Length: 253
Image (cartoon, rainbow, N blue to C red; front, side, top):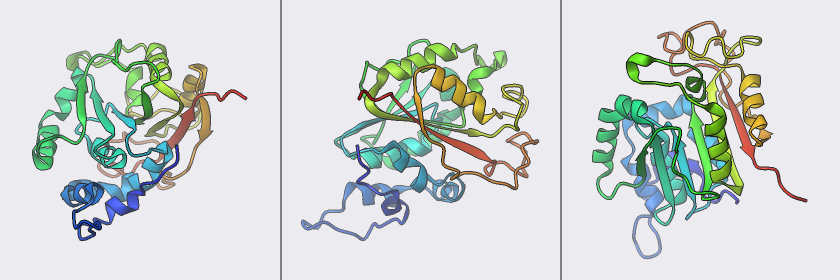
């Protein structure tokens, strides 16, 4: 898979570009429809640098895992085009949190929705073997380590979830994981208190499931974050130091 659609095209909102037959390309139409809130988030989430890591082609299948209200799902749908399949996956707890914001997004985009919405529990994600070209999991891997009974969150079998992802990913597919950085030596001790996880812990988990670490770009590194605050603290929310990990499957010689 080679990236042929640049996210810069989307994020510059090139709604005035027309094709030879005077129709607006679907990518440009998607860019025009984006909300002011999403465009503001682009400054810190940097999707124009993140989505190319999945190396998607038009017509492929990509999943926004625990994607909440679908910020990334909307962009991924434009990346794979109308002939592709973008999927927003949430479990019931995530879906409940995202319900109103997702409804607003889908109303803004209008029918037909550019991405599918799946709600299921993590014991059965529902993806067929070798059916997915890319998985994107943003700032939610740490959540698989703790339980919040009042929100019906957890427990989760992380090994089983990773095994399902491995089985569902095509041989040349990519798994991209982004999460809030935990300080060295903290491991999983702050996944609930600060919503942070140490990068080395995530790498150890995911490679133990059979994935190969391909890259760890510092795209979302923020040295101003001293890694001691809860990620929802107003002084750092939305601009935490985050690690980016790109995984694939082992390739046969």
